[in-house]
Length: 263
Image 1 (cartoon, one colour):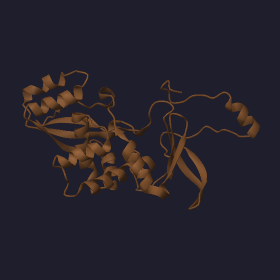
Image 2: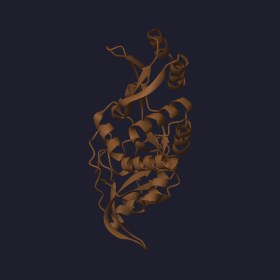
Image 3: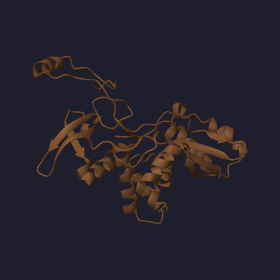
């Protein structure tokens, strides 16, 4: 199970399956949020045919938001001398992203958030909250420069560095939590979202096989779980084409960072 693969077989289960008369139909794609449909009942609620996603730690750690070309954030590099570009791009250390950004700052330049590369992703994030694109851009910089992967610590650092967005820290935390639930139950980065959830909850399978279920009816518990457990991650720079200085024909210089969120 811990070999890092996405799937594994359980031969003995076929015996149980036959005895119980269960028919297993393989289905589902990466373009859906619900992996299983369940009836749920407790002392507060009774519901039928509720779609749940499944996030499992039995293999590699699951992702909340997969990296792709859709999740690139573009920053304009302001004040960088043209003769610095090749030298910075040539940095190939183990911590090359952090080192490249450090060298940009050391050169007297700064990174200003310009836009999200794909309009669909920009639309989806803005639908969650109009501040989310700019807020996540600041948090991405905090992650890649300071390696602050924990969302709570990252957001606190961003806020206390002067990026308050004319509100308080508690309000920013609410916005980030809203984003996490929207990604989990609502939108895909490459598809325009209508604002509706297409799954009603998620089931987390822990490393020891224990299962924990979260339903949208208790949204605050789900939000808190995600905020405490989701972290920024570093995807491949070559695969997703980010992390290098790009000089455009208009003379401006840009730098991309990629957003990936993992449990």
